[in-house]
Length: 342
Image (cartoon, rainbow, N blue to C red):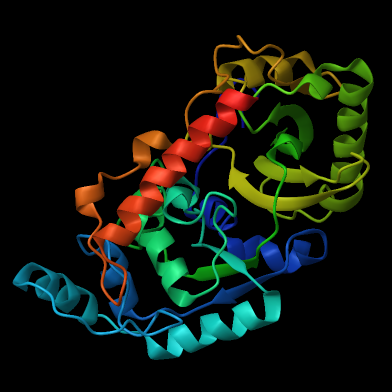
């Protein structure tokens, strides 16, 4: 492969090496405790693909009390009751009991753009099957994993022999995460070339030279000791890390393909190519170095463009539009208030 290519060759095997079930067994000891559920029924995929936002019948922890309703409410309830996953509900409840709380994702994507549908004090924290379903149903991000065409977009595949792909539900143990300690790391041809802050907020402590040196030293050592020799696929990949409070260790959150679909954050892929061709033995670290940084976001909730209008939220099994309109309003107010106080 030419070192002057912005991206490596994209094959189906390469892309599939980044689905959760492909990498997690190797790196589970340095990642967040997780459970993979597969195969999933065709009905579950149809539920995720269906129009509207509603939860399947029986997925609430506490059954909704019946009350008089008009025809519109009955129609909304009928939509939700057309889907029911009692076996999956039970499996999810078992995992919640084991982990305490969970957050979901599919093969590649997580519904972080839908965190606004759950309480803002505990984003993405699920304590019932209905929480899992409503996050997935409210997310635009996870739609990528539902379409084979999207999964293998830009891939060199034999049309007569399409790649095999099986949808999977991943339930990860939920922790309150300090996003200031999340970093995205870029590896090209077996070399760690770049590290980017993931959260687009300005943090004073991140601009201290001693802190930056510590981040670089820890992440490079972690990659060399824990990842480099264990990653047996194509040596072009992107991995996300959550560092410990003292910045001395870390946990792998995810692996992603070195591809246009993976956000380069504070880099561009052209800039990463330039860093790569320079041949430095030390990766380049990029952080938000000023409150006026072009990508800094301090006054709006993350992924606000993915938030749905209140009239679109008509939920079955006891969650109606009034419940979620209040939740939506509170989320916006609290997010704006917290950012204004920073």
